[in-house]
Image (cartoon, rainbow, N blue to C red; front, side, top):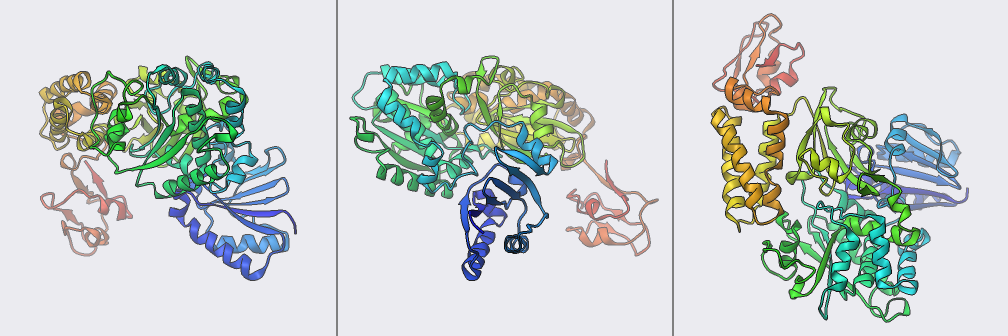
Length: 597
C-alpha cells in the first residue's frame, strides 16, 4: 500500500461535531498498528457542514469522502484500507482523475455542482497550518508577480478591471478604494482586514481564516504593495480562537519565508501584519469604530468625512477590506482579471460566499457565481426545506439585511438586484425560513440584536431602535394597534435617514422588508390577536381534542408547569391560565390530539 492519505476536517464546525475525537482515534490506531504507506493529515471545513465530521481517503488520483464519521465508522475505514475493500457506508462523494465523479450521493453532486470555488479554493483541501501545502497549490506566486514585475498603478488597474467589489457588505469597488489610498498624502499608510464577523448565522470569514489563512495574508501584502502601506492589522473577533491561532502561525511562517516583513522577496518593499483581537462588539464591524478599537479606544463610529483613506489609524491614510475581499486578490493577480469577471451578473462580477443556515437540508458554506438565483442556492444547493413545510423567506445581509419572500426567490444574486428587494448582500449570511416562522417575531429578533449592539452615540439609533423594539414587543404580545404599525414604519424611516453609521442606518431593514412583504401577519397580530405561525406565545392557545385524546397521560407527564389534568384513559384538559405555550405536549402526543389555535 503506497501513496495513501486520510484527511480529517478540523474546522470549528467539524471539531464541534466530534472530528477531533475521530482524528485522535485514527492517529492512535495508525501509530499502534502500523499501516504501511498510510499518512494522516488535517484540513479544515470543506463547506459540507451538514455532514461533519468528514474524513477523506486519497490514493493516487482517487478520492473518497465520508460524512458523519464517528469512531465506529473510522474503525471500518481503517479495516477497509487493510483489506482493500473500503466501506460503502456514509460515502458522500467519490472522485477519480480530474475531478471526475465516479460515484456520489446525488445530493452532494447538486451541492457541489453549482458552486465555483475562488475564495474557497483551498479550504478543506490543504492543511491550513502548512505553508508548504499552500505554496504547492500556487500560493504566493501572485505576490511574486506583483513584487517583481508589476507597478503599483498596474496592480490597481487589474483590480479595477476585475470588477471586484468589497465583500463586506457595502459593495464598493476594491480597485478604486485602493487607488484612494495610493493617492492619499501621508508618510505612513495602513491596511486593515475586517474579520469582525458578528452577524447571527454567519461564518464565512471564520471558515476562510481557519481553512486558508495564507490567501488572506497574501492578498493583504499585494494590497500593501499597490498602495504603499507599511503596516496591516487583521481585526479578528476573539470568539474565533482557532482562526486567531492559525493566523499567528501563518504570519510567522510567511515571515520565515520572506513573503512578509523586511525587504520582501529581496525587494525594497516591506510590510508587516499584526493580529488584533476584538471583544465581540457588533458595531466594530463599522470601519471607523473598528479603527477606534484598534487604537485602544471604545469602538464608536465617527462622522465622515474625513474617510479612512484620508484619516484613519493614528490620523494616517487607511484602507479597510474584509476577509473574502482579500481572499480573492491573489487569484485575480495571478490569473488575470478575466478569471474573475467572466462570472458576471449586472454590474457584479466574480463569486460570493454564503453561510447557508436555517430551515434548509444542507447547511454549510457555499460559493456561487454572480447571477445564480436565490432559489437555485436554497433549493438546488441547499436541498430545500428541512422540515417539509413550505419555504417562506430568506434573511440576507444579517441584522442589517432584509427578508426576501419566497415569491422573489428567482431574484438573481448580484448587488443591484438584492438591493432592489430592500435587503442587502451583506457579508454573506443567508438564513432560510419556512412556514413555521413568524415574520413579525423575526423582525423583533433582529431589531433586538441591533438595539443591544448600538454603541449609543447617536440619538436615533440609541432611542429610535428602542422605541421600535417596544412597538414590536407590544404587537407580538397582543397589545399592538394599527397606529403602532404606522408609527413603527415612520420611526424606521427616520432611524434609517438620520443615524450616524451603517448599524443604525440599516437596522430598520428587517422591519421595513417584513412590513412590505408580510404586512398581513402584522395585521393578524393587531386585528385578530393571532400569530398565524403559532410562534408568539401570548397570541396562541393550546387545546386538547376530546375525540382524539386517549388519556395516555404522556402530555401531563412532560408538562413543565403541571397545566394538564385528567385521569388515565380519560380526556385531559389544559388550564390556559397556567400553560406557558411551550409546545412540549404537542411534540410528545402520539395521537395528534393536541393543537394550537
